[in-house]
Image (cartoon, rainbow, N blue to C red; front, side, top):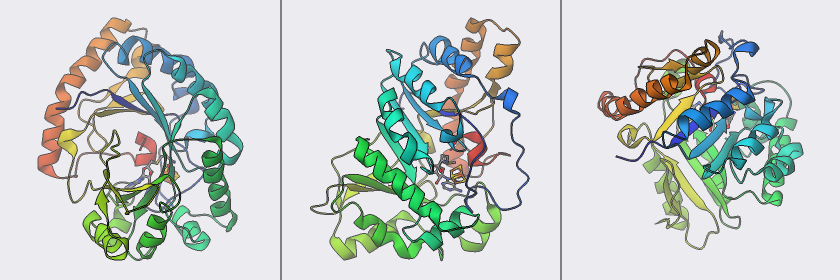
Length: 328
Ligand code: SAM
Ligand code: SF4
């Protein structure tokens, strides 16, 4: 069993995109009140007195869209400066990244994952919702800025949806030929938009790998990430292609992560709310930090069991919030 040392921290549950697979149009999302967001001081207090003493060393800032949080650069700096932080990363849609990449890098962020589901501005627009074609260009400018500033590794996340962007798999994989970027294809999961999932279905990673293999060949990569991706390389390419195969090859039993939502819910599993604790309430009600730490330790001890149960039941847990609300 891997040590559970990785915390995904959602900084905000709101987003400036409305990706079809994540936030269905017209969905009545029950956003957290702003005053319920964990403050910067509360996040740091939880890291220093609860999570770090329990062995957490790897942190990922996510959302919703983390770059919408006004104090995001200060938060990055504060977490990067904690002596125990071994790894600090962010997952973003990059819409605001062109203007913020330099400040984030200066604040100590080095690793970034950017969602880029299409290289076609029109398709991209259909996926993220809303109007206009400029958003793709803005996101692409964010990716270029991250590259220029020196983020490494720079990963691009692609959720593959049949009939929407699956025809672009080779074009997206080709980005890795002459750039040291890591393109990761994620199997579409039935969380966020069940109707789309039922209507479109999902494509397994192996059939994507086969397309790439047929075109260029494909070898297992020596580069390993911390996470659940199976990593490969097109011969001679500078970057890698990764596959996150939660649907075809459930990795629940190997899961080493916990998730903290913007409003302070700590959950042991993306798809399961079993045992979740509201750390914001605990802090604001003045519970002693030692008690909060003990509760979290109990949840940590229960996680291996939850992992095995999730593996055995497939990916259908009891959840009532979308990825954007939980912190994907
Ligand atoms: N807004 C940021 C972004 O899009 O990168 C961070 C939050 S987003 C919820 C984190 C990741 O969750 C993204 O890479 C997104 O593609 C993924 N995601 C959201 N809904 C998904 C679904 N139904 N199936 C698979 N991945 C999903
Ligand atoms: Fe927003 Fe990210 Fe969800 Fe897209 S995947 S709607 S960018 S939170």
